[in-house]
Amino acid sequence: MSPIWVLLENSPLVFRLPPNQVGRAGFTFDATKNVPYRTNSDGFRDREPGEKRPGVPRVVVLGDSYVFGWAVLEAETFPTRAEALLRREGRAVEILNAGVPGYNTEQESYLLEEILPRRRPDAVVVGYTMNDAEPQMNVPSSPATTYRYVRSWLWEGTKDLLRTCCFPHARWLPDRRNIPRLTYTEGFEAESPKWRESKAALARMAAFCRRRGVALGVMILPDFTQPFDGAYPDASVTPDAGPRPPPAQEHPRPPRHRRPDAPALPR
Image (cartoon, rainbow, N blue to C red; front, side, top):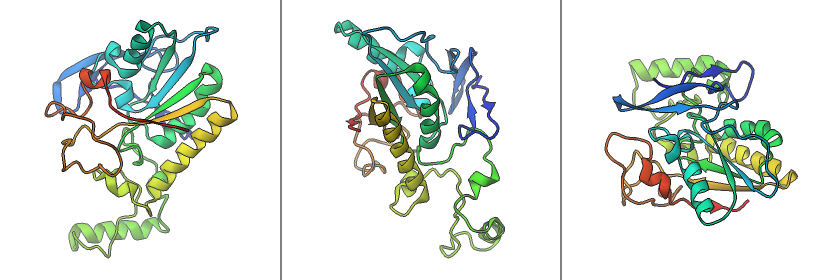
């Protein structure tokens, strides 16, 4: 069973996972497969964090389903593996998984403002995926979100009708609604309002962390639905990340969580 979202009225987070939930996360392209998950009192897929221990650095990892670890066990998520690897090297550290499936950068920026004062991390890592400039698509968007970049919702509706019935390929009828697109690179074009808002969210995170003396890093995660070769469509946005994952699975599998091959960008 897929997660049941809790809708948040008048909140920029829009939705979240309920706290203390036990469920199963299904594979998008194979309904016969799923993995168990559980959430803690914060609604995150991790153990109960408790009070921050003196002398033990705490890291919070923000992100979407890639960070959450969709289609892998909790012990196989890369925040959990990173903590285990560092501890094997004799470095005491606590890494908290705050990934929420379906979140984009804007939602993550508001989530950071909520949890940073309470969990008091020494560092924050943002797992940035190729659809993070797109609007969330887990729950229906409000009209205010869908039409945030247009001057007239009536005219946008008329254009949609004209494209549907008469002019399906008319470039003079551009769709300016803020709706999810599968061609992620369009959202990163210089004039794209989606990219503008995503950059603003990253800047908000940087400023928020800087004021509190918290280190911030951004880890760019590639699109695992695409082949990682010369035809990779997002090469201008994210680096190559190695072999393509198994067919019909759009999320990184356990080997990828062991070595995500993504750079950490300085604050």
